[in-house]
Length: 180
Image (cartoon, rainbow, N blue to C red; front, side, top):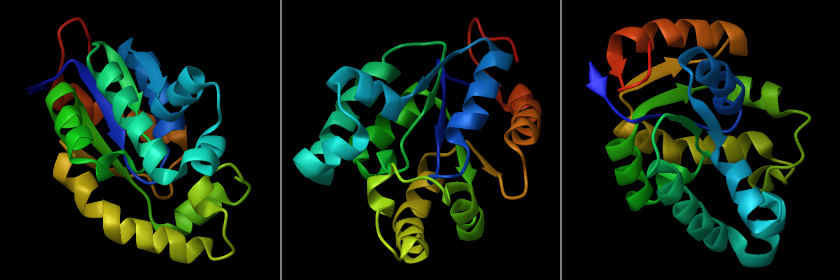
């Protein structure tokens, strides 16, 4: 058993961090927090707007501050943004304050799940598949670095993935006040 005060989901966009995370939080009695949504609430601006006005570096600084604040708490399921692992301080906090699940998804699954999404700044290009491949090359080793558990979500509905993950977590994660 790996004790940790929070459950943290990392992985690429379209892997299911938010949809699976909501279901897991409910099953474990955790407060669900989507880090990107938290940033939007704190700043009063959309992620796309933040990228437009202060660039990716400005967004990453806001993300780092938000994760530090969120991970100081306990009893939460935190769904991180896909690029949260790019910052070494984020990776350290995530490892220290959470049982980390890397939700993986292949490029084809991501493209299918994100086909109608027009809100993600990094995908506002015609070559979405190439962008996802480049992001995967850069980020996949970092997801694995922080992960306590890896789960492939390809071919699974959010409900099925949450059920499978719940069973795996029951034997691998322990937190005071959280019944698995």
